[in-house]
Length: 106
Image: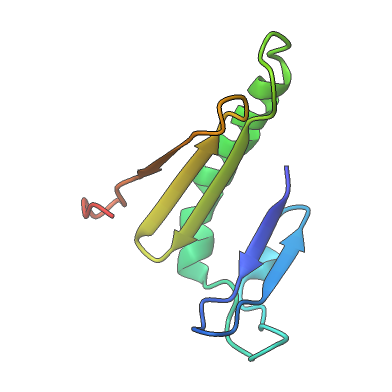
């Protein structure tokens, strides 16, 4: 499973590929524009999703009868979390939003 941080500043577009996003990345500055790549709020929101993705990745590795790779793309920014799942064999993915703890729907 690979992870990345993406700069949110409009027009920047910097992406930093990582083996895993950790708490040590909180406050990391974008090398292109200097903006914060990961806020503490985003880190707290990311942790449970990261655990779900790792578990799903482990499960998909144990499904030899499935053709193709299962790819997960999760984006967390403030109260908005977007999850995309591409099951690989049909070319069609699934996208959904989840609620944050405050009950607001993204």
